[in-house]
Image (cartoon, rainbow, N blue to C red; front, side):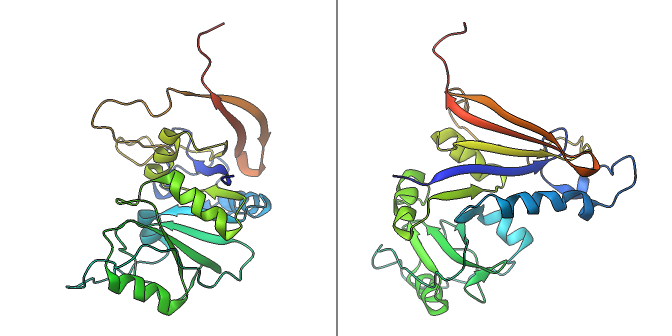
Amino acid sequence: MRPQIICQMMSSVDGRIVGNGWTRPYDGTDYETVIACYFDISNDMGADAEWLGRKTVQTDLVRDTFDHGQSPKAESFDTFFGTCETARMCIVMDPKGKIRYSSDRIMGENIIVVLGESVSQSYLEHLRELGISYLFAGRHGNDLNKALETLGEFGLRKIMLQGGGIINGSFLKAGLIDELSLLIYPGIDGRAGIPAVFEYFSEHGEHPAKDRSLELLSMKMLPHGVAWLRYRFHPAPSKAK
């Protein structure tokens, strides 16, 4: 049985997720104070892991890039179980193995890297030397069903998906999100082209959400004007009632 997936995000009123462009609340409360509720709720979710995209990790957490040099491609695609000591794990979607780590933890959480089969052998050695777990999600590293099946072997039952928008969009298209926990920051971005909660780039005109419907579970007003909405995903009804 695959782990439950809860997409946990904070966005501006217009759905943008890059906080440095958001307007300040009317009462002048500083940004860090307003968004603190996001981290409090994330910690209270009881998730076994959080799942981040490579771009989000390199933008906010680990900026170094791995140099593969002339290293040959990986010789085998077996799952590696590294250090798994923390109460919550951090899953990083990095199909090409771009991130160079300095320890086995991000934000105090042990790491599991989701890779593609084009990754170099030297990158696998880099991860093993640090005790970082990894698994393979198909040739291109984007087989989410396969990744979730393997993550079940780590004992994970509930995972928080926390973006960015591209990885959220991939999960949406695959129909793998069970719930959406969305905190609306009391501000606006207003710019075109800024990353949003869900972003799916299609070459063939697919609509990633066309087979899904949302059931509102709860609405709650939080301090400083933040609104917290929770939804459950369902298959889309066959026709309107």
